[in-house]
Amino acid sequence: MATATAAPAFQVHRIETRRRVTNHVMTGLVVLAFLLAMTPLVSVTWSVIAEGYKQLSPYFLTHSMRGVFGGSESGGIYHAMLGTVLITLAATVISVPIGLFTAIYLVEYGRGPLARAVTFFVDVMTGIPSIVAGLFAYALFAVILGPGATFGLIGGIALSVLMTPVVVRSSEEMLRLVPNELREAALALGVPKWLTVVKVVLRTAVAGLTTGVMIAIARVIGETAPLLLTAGFSDSINSDLFHGRMMTLPVFIYSSWHKGYVPCNAGDVACNPNINFERAWAAALTLIVIVMLLNLVARLVARFFAPKTGTH
Image 1 (cartoon, rainbow, N blue to C red):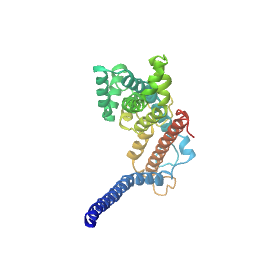
Image 2: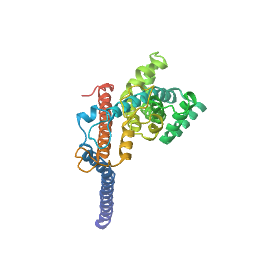
Image 3: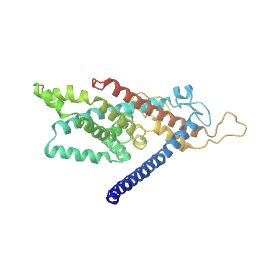
Image 4: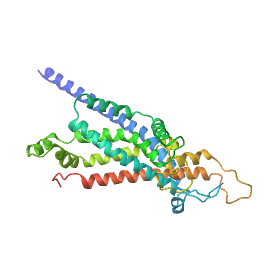
C-alpha cells in the first residue's frame, strides 16, 4: 500500500517540476525576446538624442532656412514644423470623420454585401504603400489643376489615404468593445438608434477612439515619400495649405541628409561641414518629441473623458 501511494505522489511531483521548469524557460525566452526587441529602439532613441541636441536650440525652432547657404550655423526648422502640423491637421480633419462614420456603419448598421465590400476595401487600403498614396493624390490634382500642382492640401489628402483605414480599424475595435447591454438598455427606454450611438456608444468608447486617432496620426506624421510628391520642398515659412510648396519635418530630414557635407574654405571658422547632418538629427529629435506629446495628449484625453465606472 505504501508503495502504491507513493507512486502517484511521485508522478504528481514530477509533473509539477516539469511545469515549473517549462514556466521558467518560457519566461526567460519572453524576457529575452523583449530585450532583443527593445535593443534597436533604445539604440535609435539614444543616437537621435545624442546627435540631435547639438543643434537644437530656441533659435533653431523659431527660424526658417530662408537665405541660409553653405555651412552657416544659422537657420532652423520652424517652417518644417509648421508644415508638419498643418498637413497632419488637414489629414486628420479629412480622415477622422470618414473613418469614424465608416466604423459606426460597420458595427451598428452594416449587414450584407455592402458591409463585406467596405471591410474588404478597408483591408486593402491598410496595405497600400505610402508612395502609392502620394501618386494618387498628385495624379488627382494633376487632372483637376494641371501638371505640377504642389501645395500642402495635396499632402494632407495623400496622408489621409493612409490614415483613414487605421482610424476605421481602431474605431471599429473600440466600438465592438462597448457592451451590448448598454445599447439594449437605451433602446428599451425608447431612445432612437442614432441617439443611442451618439450618447451611449461613442461616449463609452471615447477613450479608445482618441487613442486610435493618435495612433493613426503617429502612423502618418513621419511619412516622407508622399510629401515629396505632393508638398515639395521650401525654405520659407508657408502657412497656406492651398498655395505654394510647404516643407515638413520628414522631408527636411531627407533633404538635409541628402545635401551631405558642406565644402568649407581653409580658415573659414564660421563654416561647419557637418551642419546638414546636425540639422537632420535635430529635426528627427523634434519629430520624436512631437509624437511623444501627441501620445501624452491622447492619454490625458482618455483619462479625463473616459466614462466614470463608480470605483475609487
